[in-house]
Length: 124
Length: 124
Image (cartoon, rainbow over all chains, first blue to last red; front, side):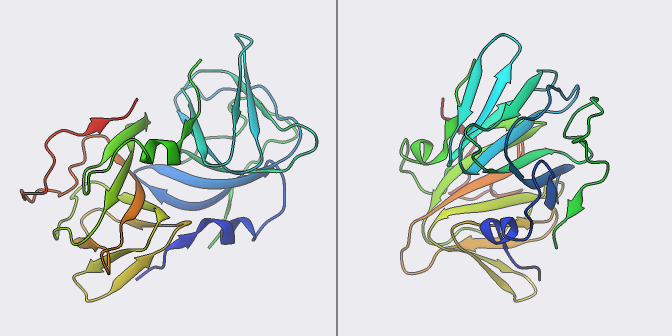
């Protein structure tokens, strides 16, 4: 019998920024954790909706229509497939977030960037 | 531009027990909230994995092999498809949980019980 997964305990197992770690899978979806700070790249995911659930700090998402969404701890936001977005944090704040998206989703979409992670780490 | 969803605010919008409320959808999955107290029925979901993320109280899941899993706030557990389980709470504690499962999953599986909800409510 496997044990429940404690989300904050999993966050304590890594420090890298912009590097999603897979903590569970179900129905073809992966549950990933990431710590982020500063700016990420504009990107989209052609076929994948992406859920951001925030555990610490405030995550900002810019959209190409000029809108910005701010997501605070206890809140989540779903970016629909095909919608370009740019995640970032303000004032050097480190933000902790849980991602839910199909297994195999690349975090920078089709954009190949120095931040692009080729293979996701798995926390057991 | 839609706004982020505050999970605790959504919990404040209903009181019924064992009645999942849909708060979001992505990639064919539904994000649902439920408040539960007491015992639920034995059931499984033949084709659907089911994630339980706990926000308040402790949820217990019995399995047919005699094992019990206790899930506390900040923890989640995935029940694989086809695995019979019985959710319950102890000592009349009300437990708040977030469910993630494919859209259309029936909360009692194929078991038709007085607790079975025919159509899920949606919180907007």
